[in-house]
Length: 111
Image: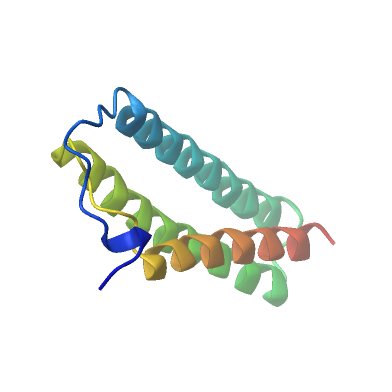
């Protein structure tokens, strides 16, 4: 197979602090997702628990757990290797899906 995803790492390339910055970015994004999930729970409890609100909150929390799993897996990969493997497209798609779906659930709770 040839292509950018299957290219051998350049032995002369020094990644510097890039893996650490990426790990920190994943941690910040996970923290943001945590804040969204907590605010979703607060919104449902404060505004009166309607059936639709509880479902949206449960979905938001489930999506947060899914994103947390993907992020933890990537953080672990970045921290165990000086030259980590490329992010798998299916994991990237899962992270994007969880993020967008959490935004939709949050918007449904506010409206």
